[in-house]
Image 1 (cartoon, rainbow, N blue to C red):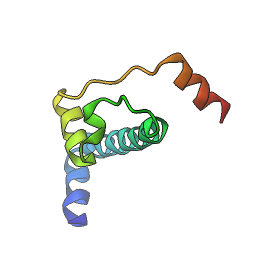
Image 2 (cartoon, helix red, strand yellow; image 1 turned 120 degrees about the vertical axis):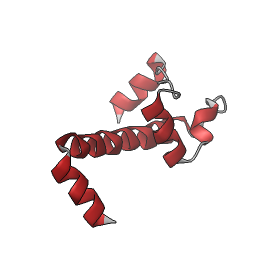
Image 3 (tube, rainbow, N blue to C red; image 1 turned 90 degrees about the vertical axis):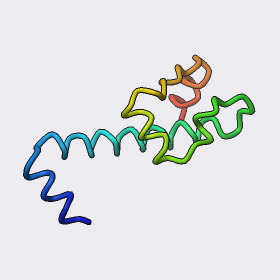
Image 4 (tube, one colour; image 1 turned 180 degrees about the vertical axis):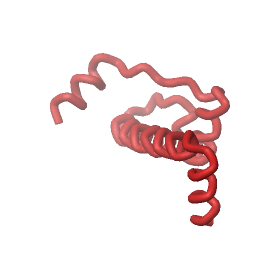
Length: 78
């Protein structure tokens, strides 16, 4: 499996960048999940498995959720 990824990177330089972007998106998503876990009203996309959510981000089906000012202030305090 790793060989296939290396081969793809060699053949298409943008492949490596896409993997980095997906990793960044996954990291941000996990951070968002931590912030909203204790809030009862959460968009249904947060209950999806990560691979499904990443696929929906790539296809444009998943929309970004705007943070409320209180959530932004909470994250700045930490």
